[in-house]
Length: 219
Ligand code: AMP
Image 1 (spheres, rainbow, N blue to C red):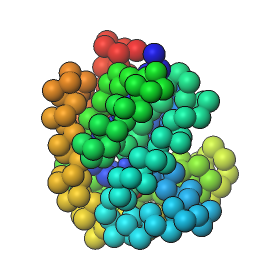
Image 2: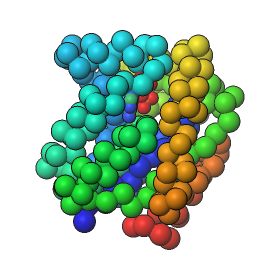
Image 3: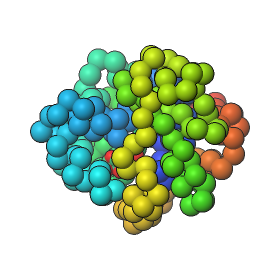
Image 4: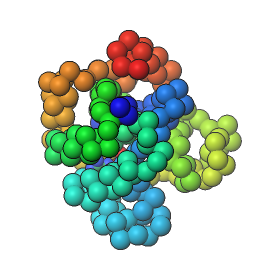
């Protein structure tokens, strides 16, 4: 059975940063729904144009196109062993659809890592976040600086500040998270999959806690 690990939490909790690290230790691929949308925007696809109109406002992209996009990604050969899902599912309907997809592809959700942090931290992290143009590697101007300013350590591409990481849009995204994504906490708790991690700690400590929890129970 392929192993799927879901990263759940509000914007700025550290899902993307931790996913990058987890993918190195587990050798599972990192699938970020936000990165997939941003790739589509960069390539000016029809999906990209549609997604942008929602993302700019801080709203969720409609379930049907999001689910199709993830389905196509999971169907690819590099997901044979499973994946780290970052930013998907974000609604109970997406979670139901994920169950169906995984049943079809011979996979299962092994663990849901629920990373928490208070609103002040979320705003601080997102407003200082820099993302790499080529592959979405994540930096922070204070907590996780690149070796050379403005340049990604991994692929040398330009770092940019996401349009939706302004304080105003982040506040909307947190509201959307509380309303539409928070129900997933109970959804996965009921299924015995939820592991809660304190995301307010330093990056290294959060990683340690995640790996301990995964080793104890799921990997
Ligand atoms: P992220 O990079 O995870 O912060 O996502 C950025 C934006 O992409 C979100 O604010 C949404 O507009 C959109 N998005 C990402 N993942 C999803 C999803 N699973 N469902 C709907 N919209 C999503």
